[in-house]
Length: 330
Image 1 (cartoon, rainbow, N blue to C red):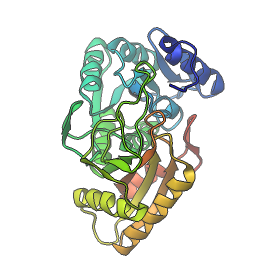
Image 2: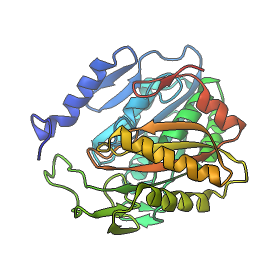
Image 3: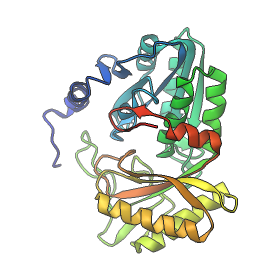
Image 4: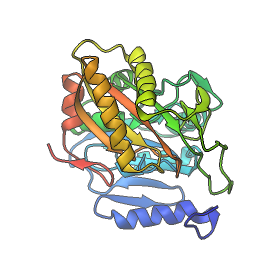
């Protein structure tokens, strides 16, 4: 195992401590229980957004804490759900008198622990379950579709709505709507190595890929020989479009996400392939994002996420955001 590590059991604590110091103008970090929270809190009452999940997907979720997105994030151990006491501590730190909205990826451990955390807090709360992955309906970790890179899009758009002072119910309804308008699918060329395991999660031959892989290295639809970027793009986007059923001349956000081990040059190549295919189908890519946002440690591969845009989703995607990993002005 070739990784920058001192003691494997301390890797998360040391990483979180470094993350907090590197972005001390935006976030603070608490340890035992671990959570990341927004440093410059809103002066007005607002719904507090809390997300989280296993570490190893950085910048998801801690990198999206800040103005216009999350108020707090709870990082579990690598690929392991955070614990209920983390959610409780985060909620008590960031609540702003309008309730807590949990944004949770559809994995059994995450859902169970967030439900337990919700039961432990006194604040009014609601939960959005993100399940944007169209690759498989069920896996070892989920009942139903997995939550993957579309989670970031839900966090960004609902975070923007929360900044306006919207109610907890309105934020919940809007988040569920964005989730339904979003679909993702990915492919892996290599496995990743969980530090505690010290060896790759799975093995692929030099000419093989895992089509429809999950962000924890879960099996996808099938294992097959590597195809060209155009062929992969066609198959992935056809699957996504079959799910979303966009209208003619539909405007979309196209997000090409890297899993941590793929160069940006290749991710932009994928974007070019995807944009051209969608254009041929009279689908307009009017918003875009390319880069490593929902990773799987050092896995080589990437995913496409498409979100159908309406006026509200576009407005809240475009709105100002300032987090460690995502920032722009209107």
